[in-house]
Length: 398
Image (cartoon, rainbow, N blue to C red; front, side, top):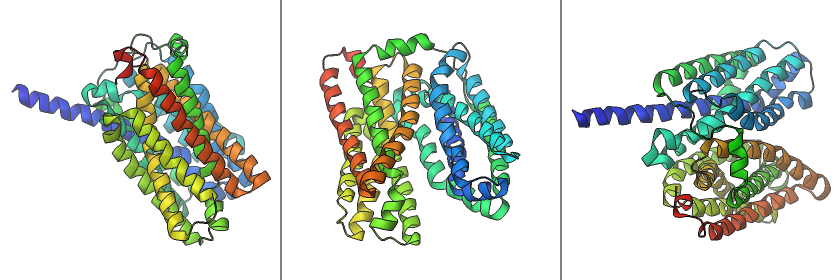
């Protein structure tokens, strides 16, 4: 009887983890839906594509601000209730966008999405160790698999559906999906009371730790590097590598698929060693970027390098978050908020840095900048490992 109860409890806990992963899928799909629907939205609302592009930019800015503020307003609330509120906010965001009649209404809906994204990753991204303490890496990997699935399947499916039914219908369907996920979380998640030290004070405590500050620097360098290069991958493939539009689509799909495989492998790898996995991740991203920046590789090698880059990027979320958690196992949500804010801000900074490089030095320079930042990340993690040897054993293991 005890074995049967244990088996049922185990299945229920994994179902809870899967539900959070589905929530991640819904958020990521919604966040990047405008990438494929942008021309339709611009045409119907009579605004420029540049203005419509704010649908992608704005959520990142609001997510960066919302992540630490989530620790303030959600300080004492049950985490299950917090996640349900955030999914309800996601549904509201999609409804506002679906009925938008002007640019300002459109951006209001996307601002609401940014708040949901920042809050969800601050709370939901830290739940793996709480839901499955003995299999934290695997649980966190399952949660982050929703990111890869949203990129590989959700966004392309939304683009195709938009062509068939219109962009408003797509956001309406996303609203319905958000409500379904909210109900699933309400049904499957156990009660998750706030842990001690979950407020804003925890942020200051974490940032006072030298290794945590080094970790923050690594987040900034790896995400700046990724988006300095990735933002200009398509122009590179079309203009420098002479790929056809069909080849470009196939390569980008392959990038997403290898990213998903990298995410799946990440759960196993970080269980062995999160720091070494993250060093490998930085090298898998940085070395291909730098080799592509030479501009002399044949097509087959270019495709191979982009796929390796995709594996590294797929490993990144689980490797980075697990490594950061090892620095503050007693302040998971605070570290999660720092991670979300830093990553979201770095996305914008990286795209800007890449753009400046392209404008002044050409497309290849963006790849060089990205690769350089990725290799700096590997160095920072190596330095952190030397520092970790001086920490108490409870702080150096996770």
